[in-house]
Length: 155
Ligand code: MG
Image (cartoon, rainbow, N blue to C red; front, side, top):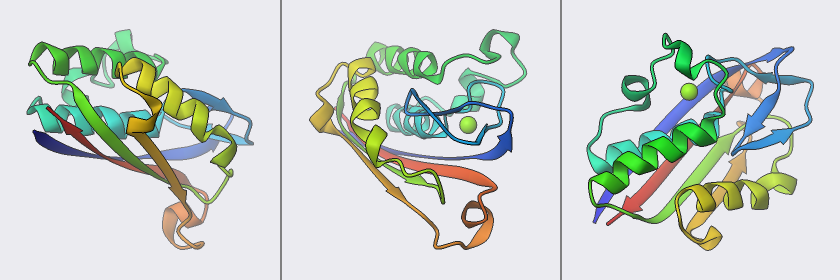
């Protein structure tokens, strides 16, 4: 068994769609990035890559590569998992925390879990998603960005 962690933050700006966990969420702002900037899925990718000893997301999907411009991060997750599988690993479980002042994420958690579980060929019960605010403190508290961290166990 091996464990990995992932952490990511993206800036929130006007004029972008908000995508978290592969779910389009109605909100006045979206995350800025080369891909769809799905910060939650990026944290999951990095946790998987870390657990498998495969480096990090920036190394495999550089934000200078036009191939990944505006790509749905669920595709990055699928490609990540393919690399993890090629090393002979599969996932046991993943635990994700999203840091966001707004919007409320509880209505979308089940769909996010389903998206991730499907991509990682596992049961939604093996994926846990938590959301928290930072009590108005710092860049996330001021609504300037959204962060996410993830821990995965693979075998
Ligand atoms: Mg990212």
